[in-house]
Image (cartoon, rainbow, N blue to C red; front, side, top):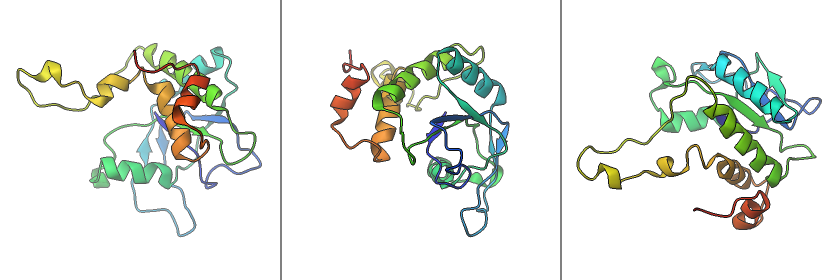
Length: 188
């Protein structure tokens, strides 16, 4: 799942929806003014994307969907940090979810929190799923070495959305206040 805001390279203000989900099997690199970067396209997972879209619509989210849109540096910069050898193609598929925070009205923290909860339900209900985990050394201490990803994924999805909004400077308030507004009361 790749949650981002487009930098007005594929989505323009004549149609800039609050929540827009990619449902394609491949996403090319956007031209951001100097020609597209020399990067391979990113694989999508159309079946999972469409399942998530249907589930979000059933949870009463007014979704927009896109195909044939190109993704900008918001994705490629992060991918290149995680997977620096992209010459062979990216090692994973993405499901892009564009959140419109550049044009008012922007979604509230509570709405994004609810979206995170709905995303969790959608992902968990998919028949073919594998969860990403950080690797750990083998040995007798393995049961004591839970990684941060093990502790927050997928249960932390709503909080990750709120943190994403804060890092994008959509919300500059106290993070705990934002989490409480969304109904999150802290770790159990």
